[in-house]
Figure 1 (tube, one colour):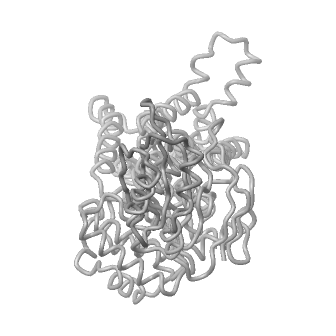
Figure 2: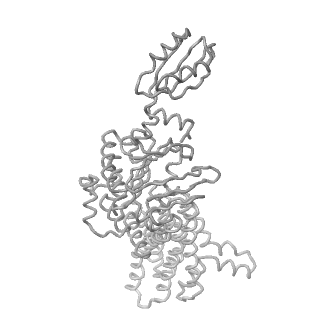
Figure 3: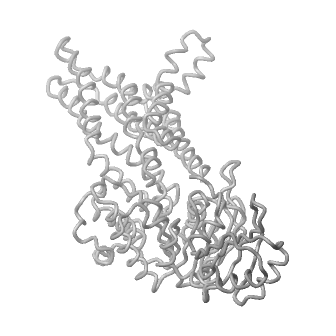
Length: 311
Length: 237
């Protein structure tokens, strides 16, 4: 459906998106995850033909972004960050205006979309007077009025309260059953809650790409055990500890005491601490410290995006 | 199709003019100033003529039209709605022409009540020369179009409406006053610079002489403004 090939964007000297490639299949809800300033918005803006790529190609359906911008704009519905909608218009007038530009003259469609997005009560209010949640819903209605195949949403839930977030997520999930949806966010739980697939970007580069469940299981089930031991060196420790079932990796860490310290990665299925303790006593080493930490997706995200741009 | 989308955009822009008080303020100020210049010789010197009114108009419009057009792109860039309009299936030309038409239509609406001035003269004098009046109004349409185009261009340059206003004002005043500043130049140079000035061409038309050179001048300025705006908007992508 969407295929992005070595896409690069410079703002003057500043490299915002650095040679990224991905494809998105039809009917997926894809989350573009990254810290602020990672290049999410820039990527989405290039997909929607708002910005021109410095290098690289984007094809959407049968169309190329640089050759058929009008066709692409017709099949995409786009909600920019924080829904910058004309604040001096009534909700109804605004949707009518967008409908006219998109050549949808049927009034029924406006009614239908206002029902889907829950706008019936505010149709005759000024956009500028709406709460942020309603404003975001108007933005969703604006993006979906022409029943697009692809929906692109830039931070659709930022700045909303928890109830509004749940409402917007439900609408997105409902839409996602039939359409291809791409949304950007810097909130992990959002991806876990709504997306089938996640692409994590940092400093303009893709650092992880996969189905959400796979990513969570590949990183999320890991357990990190930190050790501080004396009476042995790292190599013997490593050799012995790898014999324990469930241990995946052991890495040496720095410490300023005269101890051997290491971080052990293990699966979370079984607690390995008793076995490690037994090993230590068996070998007559001395255990100074042992702590266990669940490696949540939150940690994975922090690890791979650490030092990410500051907005 | 292209034309249709510009018209939709034009209607929307015109509507937003009249949902804020700014439009009414601009119209009232404009009519008050031109009215004073028309009616003060009318009552004080018992002169019933429109020459003063038409002489004043280019300078008036050099102030008023930038004030009308300053928000067209600046506001959208400032609030971010520019991103919405530019990701709808409309070309940059559709948007620019739509906004240009909105500013020009507003100018025409603002000028409509001034028809009352020649009509009031018609009531008190039998002999009235329609040539300069019709010429004056035709000239003002072309001048208004050219200034609107400059205003739209200035608005596309910046997020800040005040800066957009100042840029447009400087360009419009320059075009209006250039031939008045250059009296010290030798004659052959003066004619060249005169040709650049909007006021010179406006005076020609408002004498009742419709010369293709004057028309071409205004149309060129309008087209240059529109193409320039499209270039600026495309360049920033």
